[in-house]
Length: 246
Image (cartoon, rainbow, N blue to C red):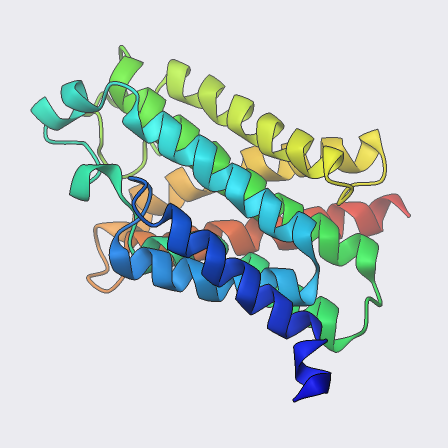
């Protein structure tokens, strides 16, 4: 028992329990979403440390903020996120499963391959914030939306739809999350930051292509599964990109 009380896992669980006990009334997540966020936070903090938890906290903060922008307008058009913009368990894991897997890999291998694992970790969240920025800002301020596969005009909110405003917002989201990861010491150099920004942005464009070609044709292809594919693609892409530069 004494050994457990001094373990990183105990303190990761305890800190997350206290934080969520205090923060669960904030309009970020559903009740079930907060529970799953506690599991995710414990994994990240137990495997990597406080900075991993902070990275995801920043992601959630900025992602929720941009979702709330113009929410009444998006709701009037029928393209707003449900539940008042609160995310549920499926959103938590759709966004962060890739990062959680990489955190566990880091722990299992005792920090071996830290540079590549952290690069993939940072890229996964960079891609997801890029996607959230592009989608939410594009739905509200995109003046013209086109299907990425053929550039034909489509209504805002269509799977695979892009706009100039949303595409620019995606780049901003990728840059912002990458910069946060850089400041939290997941990225050791400006070159690694550039890799993360590029990977996150390209993964978001890939996600739009995927949505345009497959999502509406495959009944079990949920948004959360697409998010997992997108974040995994960003991680693998960034790791391969870095290995090519070695």
